[in-house]
Length: 350
Image 1 (spheres, rainbow, N blue to C red):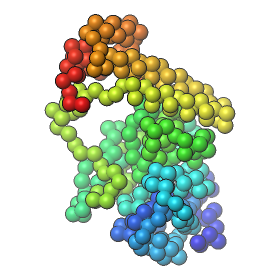
Image 2: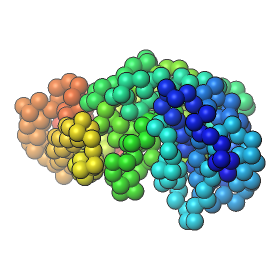
Image 3: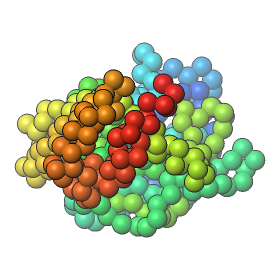
Image 4: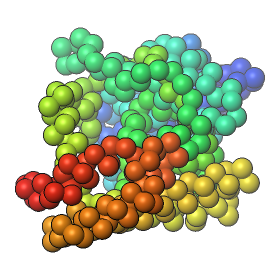
């Protein structure tokens, strides 16, 4: 629909083109407000690509009506089978033609300068993904806390950022070529979410930028697939920190992610291949440490076995500061000493 319009006129030729990828499902209540906010951008996108996952409400009709007057091409696709949210987003992204892709939820509101501001972070060729801050929009219409909330505007170079840092897709803009490296449908279970997967690829291959600028409103309502996380008290944070995950599952997930990076190497540009290899090696090292930690926290581990494993981890440098993302870091040593070594973790509820 309205594909005859010249897409070259939507953006200055000196700027990278931006496609908007929206996944919809029964979004009729809020989608028009989001569509209008995209149309109101001071920098218009190259196109809006929408993939609908079998809506039974008025979503399709609203999109088609909007497309008639939108100041950019709107491409609307209806899935023949339900994909669910993550694969639906990835399908939308796969159909985009812009150099950059902005994930877009169906129920949020973009502030007018979002695309114009976020595009500046891609002046550096090494930046593969940028994430902005947002304010939550409550049912009352009032604005709530920032999410995501960043302490500073900065660029993380390759290896400086946790590849499993949970960042929301609605605030992401990334280079399209990230999704051309691997079979995205075969992503590891640890990275099921479309946003988790794209973030992981970006961190593994290059730099990411985060900005404290609030560039959208993140609507909170009963139908959110995921909402903004609740704020915890200091006591609750300490309680969460004391919990012991299944470190053997963590190790398996890290190894699966390393394998995914190795599989992507044949199609990678040389610079990315080098980065992917470094990232995969780091994940393999962390996986080995977490396998040891899994034995340490096993319910049937003896005190003497935990002492032996703790010494092994200590001598291997596993507890040194984790700037390289190949170690466990200082927090782990205090947890293993205070909760693991004595066996307090065995008192936790299963």
